Length: 94
Image 1: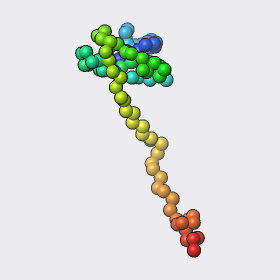
Image 2 (image 1 turned 45 degrees about the vertical axis):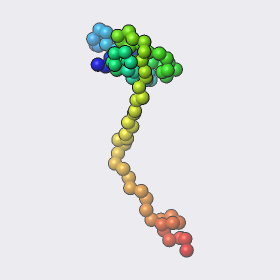
Image 3 (image 1 turned 180 degrees about the horizontal axis):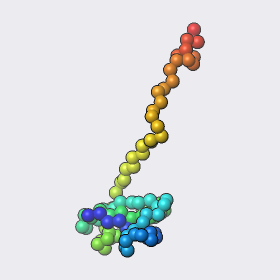
Image 4 (image 1 turned 90 degrees about the horizontal axis):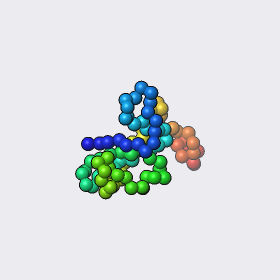
């Protein structure tokens, strides 16, 4: 089970009551409760990333999980590396 908790935020006008909205620039951290095994997420400032987090069931013994981020680019097709010309590829070295 995964719960998403926010320390602060605003609800969009068309959002369901009780729904959480991630604020721009507010990182999301994932935690696991050692007592019940649930995994949950908190939106909190980076300055509070190491602060203790209580699980949604009220258990205080949690651990922050290491998250990985995949970054991919889609700016267009890859361009081939230039060849020829220059000193080492163009025959100017002797």
